[in-house]
Image (cartoon, rainbow, N blue to C red; front, side):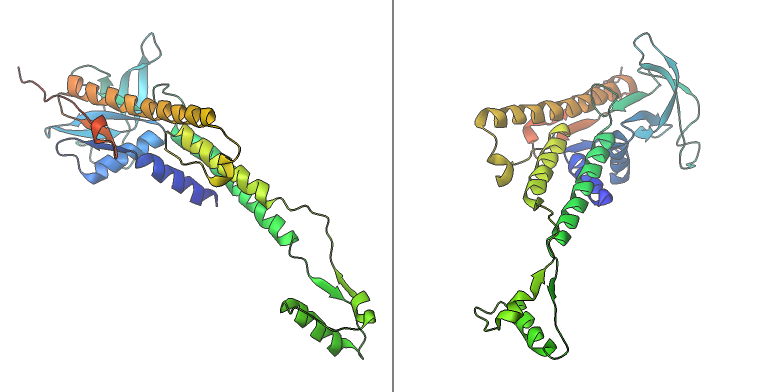
Length: 277
């Protein structure tokens, strides 16, 4: 269950953004977006002698006075040819160096961490719902003797078949019992709780979410507007970090890199073509 919820919200988050650059294929795009999701940052650099941007994890060697990486080395995590991921010290935001893409403007909290927390909560709630449902389905107990076993079996079959009327002896009725656990029915409340969790995680990830009928009964228009504002701010935070990366790619690496929100053509941002001096 945890994995199901984790993959669900991961896919929703990744599908919000589109990036493109000359020579960049779908594998590189998926790698870049997945690294922004977890661990939340990735380095961009020019693959030697290709004019194509490459991406790789990095290790920070030096920091500037604002605690931002100033010198890094690329990490070749899958043993790619050294010509594709050169192992050397690279200055950040300097010509011939590297640029860093963060998941959002605070550069600390990764979307993966957020999704993992809520996936755990949702999976745990599903397990509680399953337990509560099982406790509501307790069986009948019917005491019988060998002489009246068949008669009482027929009575129970009639009950289970939802027959509108059954003609039984008073002694038979007195021997029909159901197991009482005293466990309250809370599935409706837990379902409402799940809807709240779903709305919270989508808001934090900047994902548009239509409030369910269950939750909409308890919120007013001002709360809806406030929620929409939070969604917009979260989404713009993720987009702004991408736009900053795109500008750095153009200024530092001299390559075109474009980003946009999927389904929002008016938000498309294209960097200018590099000027050859």
